[in-house]
Image 1 (cartoon, rainbow, N blue to C red):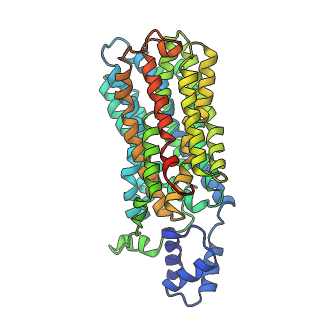
Image 2 (cartoon, rainbow, N blue to C red):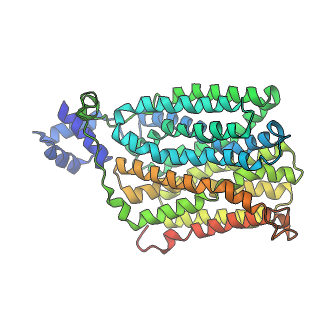
Image 3 (cartoon, rainbow, N blue to C red):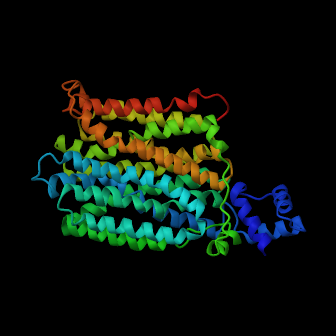
Length: 462
């Protein structure tokens, strides 16, 4: 029995799908007397990859976590309007602090993934405990934000405490590579589409609650629902390949053997290109989500329209994420990245850049949602190019990407506030000349053009 556990654990270090040759080689390394029989029993004992009840339940549970953990930050622009127009409307010089709280939420959430990943790698048997801790702190952060009386309270609650939801979510990213192989891109697209689904539904839910209950009680309700649903969603998010006895029994006896990682992936050119793409897109991906509601208000569009634009963006990202995931299973990675980045740049520079009416704002929101906001859809293929089928390395690469995007995202607030102080393009055509938004729009579109370059200039077939 212990040999079987060790074989299963070995597959997490380098083999996601065990074939006949893999069975023989792993069996030899672990001194199994009958590789064929033991290996066949091992494969028969494991749930099937890419199909079956357990695989799809895992995806459903993971999607529910994705819906709430990432969908909430994606509608932060609506909450930001409530802060500035209602909670602290009589305060002066608080815009910068409130913007910082809004951008810290997603930025530290991404960074948190990078911090939590090594902990999960070192202590895999404590997954449920760590997830429960992350769920508790992040739910409390939402509820506590309802009682904020000073702007800095929101930095602590919404900005910092919510980032602990990374501990709740992170197992999803590495376990996805255990449950899905041939359909990995599509599964990743479906999973990350739930972010857009949450971002498109939650703004209307929040607006409805706000109209009926006011800001404080609506945040309390959201926090309680978040805690309840995420607790249920954790149940099917489990391992396909059980931990070895060294990571279960040994964990309590001080004999734990930690999984070994092959760090050679850090030297690959695709790793550098992937990090560059993630950083550049991370510096601009949240700018439209953060500022479109305020932009709509400045254009004298109703608050509902601002909510509607965020919902359109996020709703468009649902088919966008799925389509990108499907494309990465069939097309070259650089083709998918180039198409996505060019589409995002065009949406910013042409549609948002000349948007002075509802129609162009809606068209921008649709194209932006399907391209820029959906760019996480090609992460699965980038990770697979770097990590191969090593689930442990895949989890670390995702954590590295998430941390880099977090760094990029943390620049969003300070840079966007600084750019909005500049009036270089004021008075020119369209939205470029409307108030001080022109430089901000130009900055966002240009970053997406540059983001297309890293995978285009490195040699090799990608």
